[in-house]
Length: 151
Image 1 (cartoon, rainbow, N blue to C red):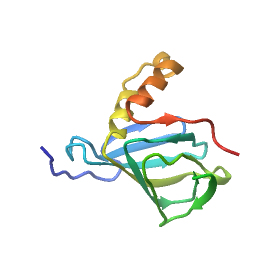
Image 2: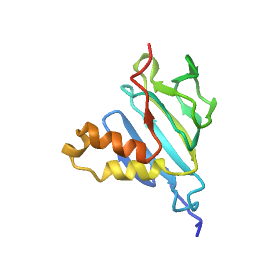
Image 3: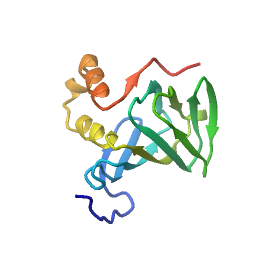
């Protein structure tokens, strides 16, 4: 059953990684799996290699700073107030321009990325370092890696 919620600033399940700090604002449990809403605080070192999602779409709304998106073979810079929508099966990558941090909201439809973050958050360091395990987990949550960050 879907449920109502109130999540204060810096609230929600949070996952603080070396290059990213995410807060799940609306989880798959809140929406019966329809979507998840995540606040993503991208640290200056953040980058995410080329990948696609075969079953879910992602929509990003840039709250602060600039984020470089590689979509459909080209780079573009999304500044504060920009919305980016990426349907399933579109290869994409992200990085921070000029080593500055940024912050964005991300909607995943249907949900699942929030569960991926929870699975990563429950892992021990040796599990996080296990490439084969990470690849299986990524595919389980509809993240299909296609390579590194494009030039």
